[in-house]
Length: 63
Image (cartoon, rainbow, N blue to C red; front, side, top):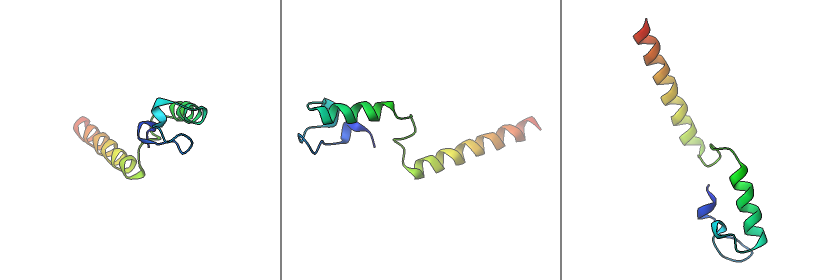
């Protein structure tokens, strides 16, 4: 989940606005995580299947 959709339990404002120290800390933590942390497991599986299919297509065309 991305931080622009999260609501802070401390100040009830969107975390992306960073109104309180809790929001700012969570926003920093979420920004430091990797690029694939926002994807759900199903999206990762679909991405993996697409990559394997593309690799198989490339191998078939070169053979």
